[in-house]
Image 1: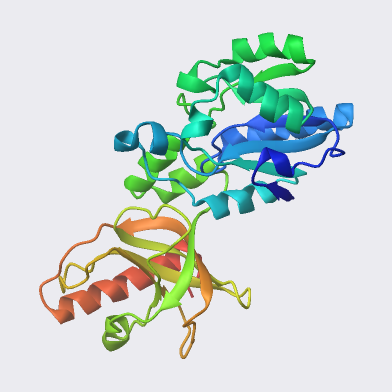
Image 2 (image 1 turned 180 degrees about the horizontal axis):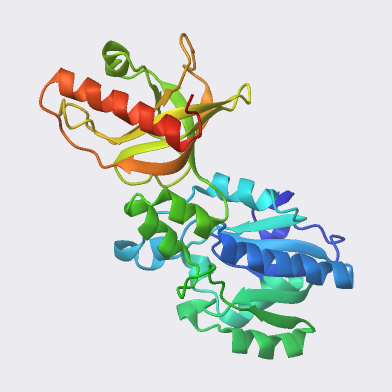
Length: 316
């Protein structure tokens, strides 16, 4: 997938396009439905597929006081879009000049002049242009002027649910520690990736060494607690079963920031320092609590490890 970071980077001979526009935060099953429909349309008319998205949530510029955290970081969003077999993604810098662009100017400069759009696909709640004045209806009116069609893709509802899929829902599920529910809405497992760094080595002292992720990770971290899941070494590609802890370790009360730590099951002497790893959350086991005494803590960690083994199907 080609990544354009400005409309001027699109070659003049790139060809006609079918475009899907959105924030695509998390690239959940609703986003994937839009992109799948775009691919089908492009195949019918022999056009290129392009996702148009933004380098930040527009609320970060327009109303920062209510802007939510991103479900995934920008580079991770591009990776996820790249997995969907698109020809290109146009990543627009959402700043004050773009926010002040009138809806008609947005359409002409980006969709018509740069992308030579043939069909645009958007969700029902899509808004664009200065003050959010642009709607799917206005987009259709402009399409009749500039020779493109507009398709509004229906909301997606997971089987058995009456709530439509949204990034807001994903955030709520992650905040509740419901990683299994979030995975259903995302259409993929909940993961965070980062570099393994040196910690306080308490896990090793307790008999359960952990791989500690750096503060900079590529996705929204689930709620504090203990989880079953997997750790993939992105250097070697090896995937290990793991018991995962998220939080500030309240038993010791000396950890200043939330940490993601993964204890790899049934492995000794594994050296991951400096490696980039991906932690995959499968099941929530319990919340994070403070324990009275080391013996109680060690016994609980042993129980967590045993429960993680069972959830991951590793029971003897």
